[in-house]
Image 1: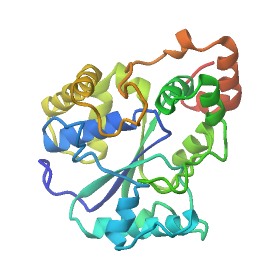
Image 2: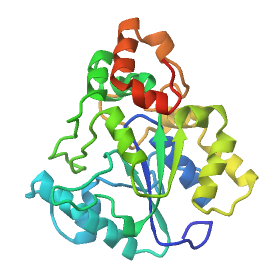
Image 3: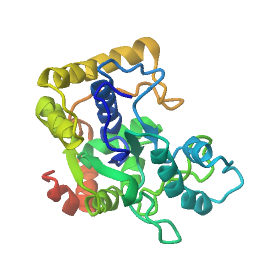
Image 4: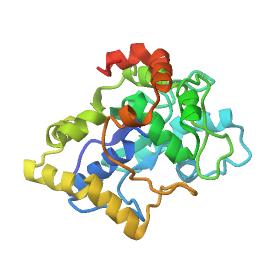
Length: 281
């Protein structure tokens, strides 16, 4: 049990398009719940990956190796229900999938075991820079990926099942239209005023904690501290071939690093959804 005591059984989905601040929010949530720093080499308490193969295999006691991607996807809602049934407290799951249904029409993320969704969004002009570094690709290739409505991860990844992501716009719109009670957090707002917006997260999740506890969790997961910890001990979730996971920790880098044509492409692809979140052209 975490230090906040008992809470309703169910799942909070921490949902975002990749490279939008999901890891930071997970680390903060774990630091607040357990009132301790998080070991980046272990990532204990930060929540399961919703597309993790182990989650399905462990909770349904089967091997997904011989299943098709569609067959494995049908099992995910069953695994989430089993996860909730196995505990008497809230669980947090990291999600990079778009919200939607399986091929049979079942909700991939079932409402009956959902406590809420923490939807983290970030300016796609900055997302493309982090995505390029994370995936070791060119910025132009990252911009193409952000606009790809068919974007998905490999169906046979070693640790994960396929994630259907779609484009940045369709992914973001899908979670904004999901049927869950939802807290939407902009990455830029978390940077500008972390105490205010992380306090909103704590309230949304029903955490009865003091402002001092929230400030302590913010300090424990500050970018400078996380970057230093990664440099010293490494980071469990850093992909092979990637130099650093915690790269810059600031907003608006696109103004310095993107060409005018690259900015035009992103704004043309995602202008409507950008405007919805206040990301001005």
